[in-house]
Image (tube, rainbow, N blue to C red):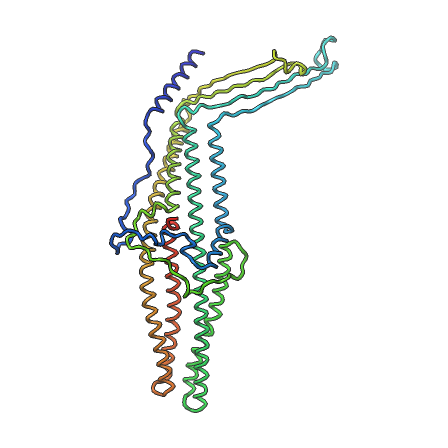
Length: 471
C-alpha cells in the first residue's frame, strides 16, 4: 500500500513537471473586424492632440456649476455607490477563491467528565472510581490539496479577471453618470433659455397690443387686428407655465442623479455662453475603442469564463490532499500534556472520480455554453461601440451645420418682423403680415435654442461613445 502511494505521488510530480515545461498558448480574445475609419465621410487623418478624445471630463464641460454637479454625482449617485459595493463583493470573492490555494490550519480540543451512580443498572465494582475524566487537544497542522493540475490557480485567475471586469464596469457607470448629468444640465439651461425667449416675446407682444389698442381707439385700426394681437399674447402667455413645469421637473431629475431630495439647482453659464470643446478630428481611428471600459469589461469576463472552462475540465483529473495533525490525548486531564501522551498523523489522500452520473461532463458543457454566450456579448459590445461612435460623430458634424442655418434663419426672421411692424405703423402693410412674421420669429428662436442644446448634447455623446476620452 505504501509503495503504491509513493508511486502515485511520483507520477503526479512527473506529470506536473511535464505540464510546467509545456508552453501554454496565451489567451487571445476573439477577433472582430474593425472599420478603418469611423467617419465614413472623412479622409484618413491623424487625430488632433487637442481633440475631445484627449480631454478629461472637467476639460470638456467647462461650466463650473456643471462641474460641481458632476463631482457630487460621482460620490453620491446611487448607481456609483452600488458599483463600489459590486467591486468589494468581487474582491471578497477573489479572496475566497484564492484561499483554496493555501493550507488550512486549525485547532481542536475536548474534555469529558463522566460519573455514574452505584444504584444504576450497570454493576460497578466497589473498588472502581465513580467518575473519570479524559480529554484531547489537537493542532491540525495543515489540510491541503496539492494544486497539481493548476485547477485552483486557474479558478483564482478567473476570479481576478471578474474583479477586473467589475472595476471596468464601474468606469462605465461613472462615464454614464458624467454624461447623464451633463445632458440633464444642458436640457435645463435650454429650458431656461426658452423661458427667457417666451418672456421677452410676451413683453414685445404686450407692447404691440398696447399700440394696436391705441390705434383702434383713434380709429386707425379695427377690432379684428386687436383680437389677432391678443391671440399672440395669449399664446406666449400659455407657453410660460408649461416651461416652468418642465424646468422644475428637470431640476428634480438632476437631484436624483446627484443623490439629493428634489429642489432647485444652481445655474452657471447661460446656454449661449456654453463653450463647445475643440473639433473632433475627421480621421478618428477605431483604435480609440480599445479604451472603452465596456469593451474591456466584456473582455475580462470572457477571459474569466474561458478559465472556468479549464477548471471544469480538470475536474476529471485526480486530486491529492495532505492532512497532518499533532496534539495530546489522555484518559486523565492531569497528564494530558505529558510528552508520552502526544499523538501525530500525516495522511496523504488521492481521489480519482470514476462515476459521477455525468456531473463533470455537464459542468464542462455548462461552462462552455457560458463562455460562448460571453463571446457573443463581447462581439456585440464591440459592434455596438462602433455604431455609437459613428452615430455620435455624424450627429456632432451635422448638428453644427443645422445650427449655423437656424442662426441665419432667426436673424432673417428677426429683421423681417422689425420691417413688418415698421411697415404696419406707416400704413404700408396690414397687421396680418407683421403678426405672421412675429409668430415665425418666436418659433425660430425656440428652434435655435433647441439646436444649440443639441450641439452640446452631441459633444456629450461623442465623449461617452469614446469611453470618456483617452483619460
